[in-house]
Length: 273
Ligand code: KIV
Image 1 (cartoon, protein in one colour):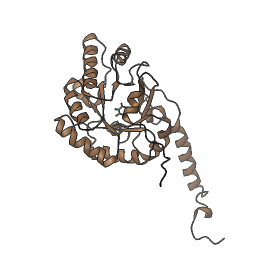
Image 2 (tube, protein in one colour; image 1 turned 180 degrees about the vertical axis):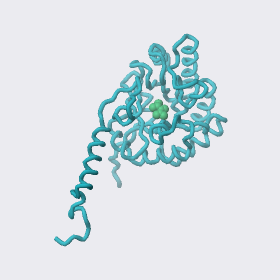
Image 3 (cartoon, protein in one colour; image 1 turned 45 degrees about the vertical axis):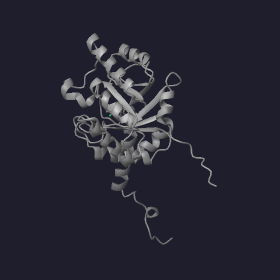
């Protein structure tokens, strides 16, 4: 008889149960080394399409593909055993129809082993959320500042700053809750609105530039570690300067190579003692 002692990953229903009990701590990861380091400390890891900008140095998130996202998600899933793993649906992979969304979401989950998907969109996307949830795919909704809408929004601008926009975003969040989303990301919105949506919904809200009142928080990992270049977004906080640790180590390595201090014979094969 085999005894299974391995702890199971945090599931989507578990995350939902955290509402009102404890805050959800989430970050992005795109690769195995980061995922390994993040896993035990977090409730949820998102393979964000922000990898387009952070990892591929692209100007926006619009050109990352399903295949690229699935490959990153697979690396993250294989390197973790604790956190719930959610993968972003890339631009153009779900907006056409619920059927298109289902086949791309199912393909990404099958290829990667992730636990659920995230989609950006308001009321108009709620039917797609319902279609996926009714067919077994957990959906994390994403409203407010939606980077995939950069061209219609006219830039990466905070949302919900006037009554009309705030009411629309509240309606967006409620529509996804009603359609079965397990949680909703609130990105780049006015603080009182983040608080209001959190109070209005029975599902968890996960804020990024939203409100301390949200049920959880998510940030891009590179932003909190000093790996994003010079500019940290207003909504992020740098918790460590890993960039300078890496730079110092790399400079030391280059110096040792030039000074013929590395490699030594102990780093070589077939050396007679
Ligand atoms: O792509 C991303 O990283 C996101 C955020 C919510 C962090 O969508």
